[in-house]
Image: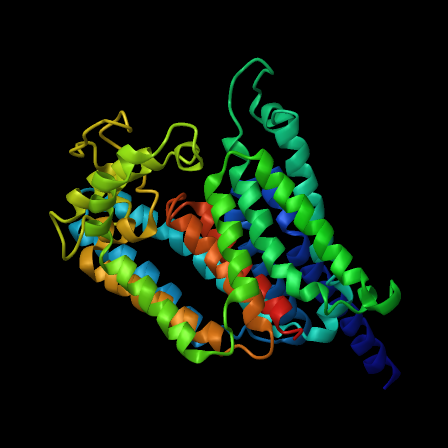
Length: 416
């Protein structure tokens, strides 16, 4: 009897240690994006695997993955794999599909772990999230101000080499997304509530974090990150979360923009690109360059409007019909726009797929209990806005960051 009690006590202590370690790892993960953004591709999945395997050996518990998340991840991977049938390079398409699967499916395990952790296990550590965001912002500020010394050290670059500030953009994006995930939660952290008279401390923490993040963005060259900050902030403060039709309108807007993207961007290139003033914010954001890329990718995609050309087709295409006014090459690694990438790779099938996926995601966000939607929607818009202007959909760190932020919003959102 005493031996059984001792064994159960040891198992309980080990389980507490495992769960606490997982929570701390998730909440401090934004720091990893500064030191090595590329590791964000796999570290979230590794944490998920450790949590699942450790939980099984300690308590024989099995992972429970939401059916909807499993369905969409399986559908994304399946569509990429099927597109090998019409890809120019079947082997490349299948290899890329495998890499996507190796990031997304382990990411689901992290989501499963986040859902299994009880709020009382998470709450004592919630203060680590704003701490991690503050440290990440401070590191990025120092990196930008002193001309990227850490990046130069890691890459072996001399101080005389001109590299700009773009290498910091991935870390900056991860910090901005984590900032919006933690702002509503700051008011739920028990340790913060009584630290100042009339509960003013959470307001002070939010203000300090906002100043750090805005300073970081002001020093950066990433206009996509600046735009995502503005859109996420507007959604946090102004979006009518309790007005159900607003969610349907938002989903409809996204669907229209995706479905009409190949024609819309051609009009934009003809009417907007030449009017961008030198030195303006749009010029600094390479808007004319982006518009020309969008124009020639759109025209190429419409040559195979139903199926597209297979996963990562843009990377395999070297003969785009480009005017070379703002973009000097006839090739590009990705379109810098997720809607055009869907059209280029999967045609109208991909555009419809993407529209339905985003609509379903918004529907589920709208149904989150309490204030959890205020955690999730701004983060969702961060990803959507940057995916529409910046990174390619299948970059490893980007997929890993998405799965991480999905797990993080679930983890902190359950505290409302």
